[in-house]
Image 1: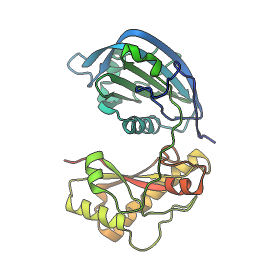
Image 2 (image 1 turned 180 degrees about the vertical axis):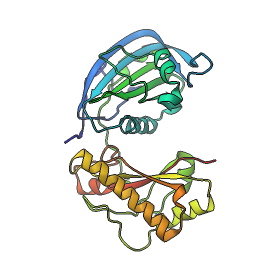
Image 3 (image 1 turned 90 degrees about the vertical axis):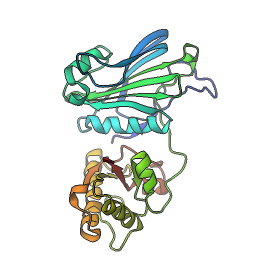
Image 4 (image 1 turned 135 degrees about the vertical axis):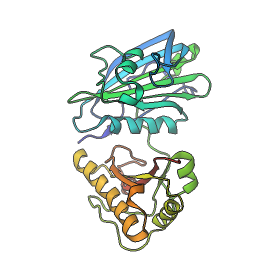
Length: 309
């Protein structure tokens, strides 16, 4: 079974309270590849797609760390690998400056204009890759590049911090959320401001996609929002606990999201054209899967806003 695990191959000793420490979660099937550190170096951070014969970017100087990992899974798509890492970076305080995938990045030209570690430390499928650049504060920048081959995923991260802060860098490891989600109706202000909210009063048993009969405050609020804003579209994303195999949980999580979609259409009159349903399995937990309460919190459906136009 694929589970989340701790990776502690540190870049350097991490002093207590270091302001530039960064911890992220990677799947257990991951193995480190490249680990390059330079105390005084430069890196051009892409800030837009390749267009008009050029790739826009910001030239950065400082301590540069280049790392990559291989993830041994045939079933995870590049988006399923990318999304949890992007979410964790945002939770850690990073602001995404630019994000793209494949052709919208500029395809072949983007791939060969941006810095990529050489094989076998990194592999990029020109038709299937995801990229983002992000910033935290004024002096912490990074890029994330995710792609896959026929049987593995690949992750590359390049990070630039002030030269004197090199000792405060830390490789991805496991961090559990500090608190479980609280019950209640969806925060529609959060949906507008941050693009996502949890439908907190929905409940699923382990292994089940059945949604109980009756009304749900979260669906009433969400349907009212969508009916009042017919130009808005959302994707309902199902999540599971970590019981069972990944492939089964991916299918189960999508069935849960689909059950919510059908309820919104049949019981609340939301046009189907405003809704999509997808599943992430157990790849994006919000609580520890070692406890009953944590597993219950992880069995959830989120609403993600696709547009505000």
